[in-house]
Image (cartoon, rainbow, N blue to C red):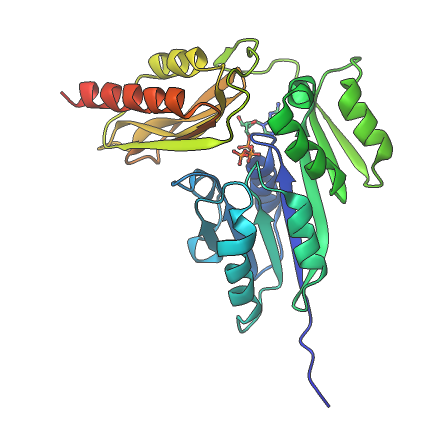
Length: 299
Ligand SMILES: Nc1nc2c(ncn2[C@@H]2O[C@H](COP(=O)(O)OP(=O)(O)OP(=O)(O)O)[C@@H](O)[C@H]2O)c(=O)[nH]1
């Protein structure tokens, strides 16, 4: 009689850039997840900032870098899944946070046909405040829609009281068979800086991601101003900025389309920033400016 190992349940966290995947995962971890769970974090770019921002025991997190777009499927993601399938003892559960521009529908399909894994849920997070912008941006819209359509649990956050959802999102919600969970925007949002995000220029080009690493940092106000000045190409920026290495003092920065949040931290040894946008040329200029500012603070 052949022995068939029990399938490993997989919980996916999907949704567009900055939609709230890492925040939710951290909340679940704090509330308590199954012992012997394995966490896979598939971030975009050369630095895996998300893995750094997840509060879980190190040896149980697998970091996949360059997790941009769908390279995740052919390359490192499929290989990692095969490796995880051979682990003994097998993890009790796998939590997989996908990159914000991953085609989650393809990953759902991959798990559904797998002999070793079973999809427990695909939680898709949606920032309602950006729905109108995402739906008119051709490059974003295809990814964003497919992410929502493949959800088995849909979380719509940053909803405004007494304000209906943007029509394209309301249409997707009407068609979904997934349970929908709404989370209101807190009345006093403590963003460091909020500006209406201009339309993304250079709509013809694809996604590009660049990063900056330095022993030195940049003052919060200067960084926020600089990121806001690239709002016509920048979708997302995040990372940690070191202001005082000896005291591990600095701040975490989170930028999503016009909104920038900075919060102090005491666990930062060096500056690591990653950003994703549309125009490679503009992103390279941003990268050079950031590097120059870090260098200036070193002198
Ligand atoms: N108001 C509000 N803000 C949120 C919510 N979820 C996340 N945020 C904020 O949105 C920003 C991005 O959140 P993340 O959890 O890092 O988003 P993400 O989907 O993991 O981002 P990527 O991995 O870069 O795609 C942070 O500043 C969070 O504090 C939410 O439910 N409500």
